[in-house]
Amino acid sequence: MLDWVQDLRLWFDRKYEQPAREALLQLIERAKASFQEPLVSLAGTLERWFEPIVRYIRKRYTNGPTEGFNNTIKLIQRMAYGLRNERNRRKRILARCGRT
Image (cartoon, rainbow, N blue to C red; front, side, top):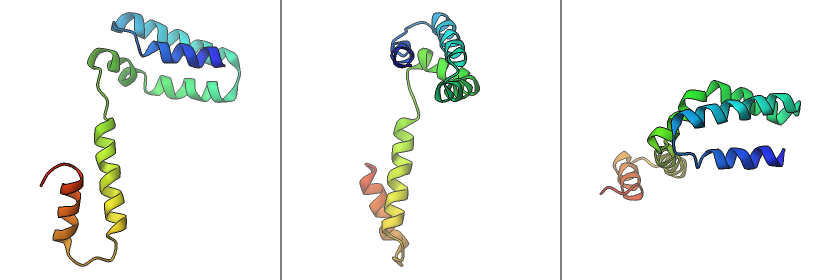
């Protein structure tokens, strides 16, 4: 299992889409053949998200920053629960997320 995880980490260093596509398919097949439930489950997830995962090789960007902003906004909203002034909550969000 640890070899498989290490191979998956190395997969993200690939530079070209077609070899990455083939390598990911091999990783998925190895995970299914392992009969270890966590790997089999992960193989299903990788199959469902195959195209977006391979697209990472071509574009080299993710939605991580957007998810981070959304998480920050939700945190501020939870902390501001019960406050009456919507304008102050908006200012807090903009100040925390980089805009004034």
